Image (cartoon, rainbow, N blue to C red; front, side, top):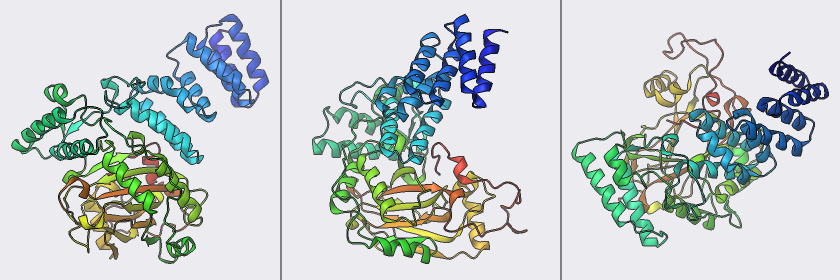
Length: 489
């Protein structure tokens, strides 16, 4: 029997829980071949299963010493360190994982999801911060320059839009006025302006890849982390003016839609505004009408955000049940105009908490700018693209089911807490020009749709429903489409 055969047999024994027999075989294999990476990895797994974490770590490290590219040992060591609270110690392991491409990134984001599920939010934040710095860092940030980012070919592709360039110019001017930058942004602002003018002159109103010429002129800074505002916890994140028990009850009484005004405390609201204005984390520009997105693992990550999530779960125990951990955090920032209904979709979680932070005087139409929530949920037999990207199917379904809509106008510091699976859309946005006037919403997603206990699905396919192809088959749970990370809209 070869060493490889012995290792495989030991692995099968460990899978059956026969750890002593498995260890005996694996140690015998290592006596014959002390540099066998898989044998060291599998021995580490056996020692981990019996609770000897120190030896497990030593075994994983020896596997990597003999086989530096051993992905399973690298992942096991990384996972073990994170479980032991040593998130910062995983930096080099995470870097090597990201060098493997999309599969490595997906594995890393799944670890963030696992930490969310375990409600280990500080560890999730630390891991997400490492991911953001590895993938989006620049010579400007982090300031200590201790981060060794992955090479450009292992980083996310970047795309130009003139709307994002104009946003970034405004943001750099704002940051310069606040005096928070260590570098002179004037040359960068001028370079961004030239690229934006070219796109506008060529009537390019969609994403285009960052070409070699643009890479040379703005590649060092465009869609990179230049500044992220420190945003620590405050004494109290949620305002004390709204009654927790009443909101908890109204969510159920009003079929999963409740509005909370004066949502955040004054200190938390101001800190959130400052974080969103200053932090250069608005990388996602694939949306129409100049909307920009920012996501947790890309830098939209701060202790205050976690504090808000934790206080919400304590305040609303029957809405945000014990089995509804935090799943995602993101922000969206608008330009001056967005057509009504252009963001119609449903989400993959059990409960959404969406709140607005831009000052009210920026809104030019006090009767709009908010959210429309329909009383129809996304059918279980739809796939992700159907309920998140096929406006034609969604509108046909809403018309067919004679959906009614609850219109919730924009108010600063207003939160809408609702069943994540209900179709919803941003109302028409008309906000005043100027960087500080851009409409910003922050969203928390809690729980998975398949775990929803509040409002089980009531829709069933009908013969004339154009979306009902495949009805009666296994439901296409929307959360499985985004198990590790969001591809929203």
